[in-house]
Length: 439
Image (cartoon, rainbow, N blue to C red):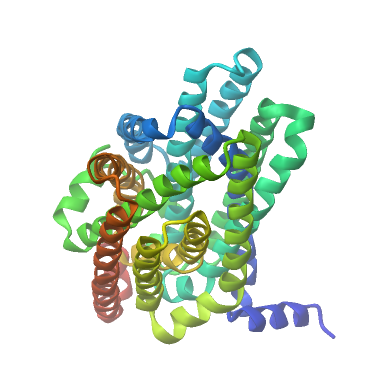
């Protein structure tokens, strides 16, 4: 048997081209390192959020939104002036230094409530921006046809990391403490920089067109640090993606607040709360991995992006209706696991495929604006809306019905975006290769 035979067999198993095995594996490793580091810290963040009071969660969401607004001009400046291929190393390096600073803080003030709140906000900002930048690089390196084959497989690395991260946290926190977990997360982030550089070198050796050449990616994007905002306003397609993300975040926030309320009610002990959050994460990532490896890519190639963008919102509508009829933790846990696993396995790869057919600047600036500012803005607004509904109506069923209506709008938006993306890709295919490259 030749050395290439195992590669062919693996490529056939996962539904990709044999030549895409190397970058698919590198992309999966990139997300594995990023998500393992993040998910080690996520259960700690959730427990800190409850420690500050469930009734105060909307303030943490608002603080996260304000912090995101403060960070975005810095990222815009970075993307404007730094070589395109170095945006990720600079961003990840900056966050690794932040983690080192928080690790020192955990040494000096482990029980300080305001430090805990600051860490909650910072991790929420880091999460969206770091993940968005990683997907920006992949949307820059891979066209739509390849993305349909490899994005789900790459996203499986995130699920593997999300599965291993909480387990590492549980095993290691007693030995190295919270500060040690932060140092380890920083090391994983640095390792992810090395993997991203490998991906860039692979594309250097296999350029698609002028825009994908090494020379083009060695140039800064230029333009304004605020171009992400203005690009979204000028493009109906990008506005549609922003609306999709806004509705996604609103659905997530409604379920997140209900989760916090029911976990606090059902499990008063903090250690039990952390175990519950960790168990939910393990179930979510396990389901997501199976789908990403064997189902998502094949669905995208045969049925198109639409099925990835619509299926989970429709299921979420029925989940909210079930929750309205039976507002218990058991029902909430099922709905949360199914929705989050579906988001990782279907919605996220489908959403990232939407960006493969936009101009290069939008893949970094507009995408990061949508993924961070729009997402966290929706978090903040829907957090206050959920708190208002709970305070006025004091009826969980009403919040669930509102959530069902939002999820229905989310499904309709996903359907419209899939059709728009198909038209945009078809139009691009008719253009001369060099013309599409310089859009």
